[in-house]
Image (cartoon, rainbow, N blue to C red; front, side):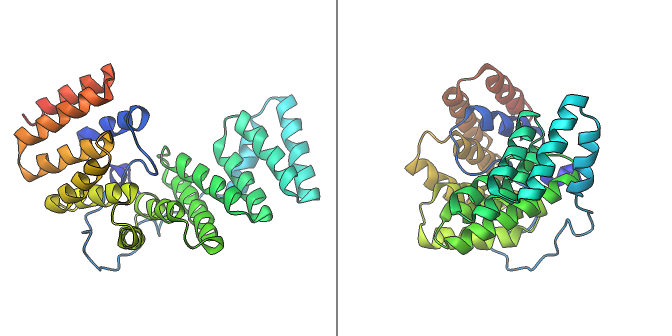
Length: 282
């Protein structure tokens, strides 16, 4: 999948990143870039179908080969112990080694193996969230696809254990919309959430973003204003509400909202980006 398939607003991308670091948010990050409408029932093909997913075993071998002798020996020893013992504790030891080594792909892989042995909602949710977090910061298509598929398997397992886990359902929806590009699968899950809880913050923000992507600005405005009525401090919803008004052609309203968002975030870098962004359409 090409990089532009993950970008929603183009020149607004950096702003979204800054919102992630400085804004009030929960649940999900960057949206994917797809043209499918929120209200559409179209059964679309998986856009990542042609991408060969990462071979994690070969990847791990390549990474181990590049370690210094001491860490290489430690990694090989911990891995061998984990293979022989096949316990959650031994697998977590390997995961913690790779977490300290700052390779979260390998770490997540071992945390997931351990979690599936433990078979608890908490441990599998942790593994799924780790895959989702690294996926949202990954550009390489083959790695991103692998991360998405691992996260999807994790959150599906969580929902098997607890079908009422709303956060897992929203996370799973995010995996589809951002990871595999299967937008309608994600939308279906999000609708299930909002049908039971029309005020769910995370689901409404994601659906609002998807509505912007498909040019349904009135629908986006409705959802994002709902969020802000419930959570006036939610800078992510405020930012995308401004985007929705901008897309609708109401530049004056958009600028007012961007300025408000700028004041709420109160970060110099964000302020600079907002100011530069406004200049592009003012």
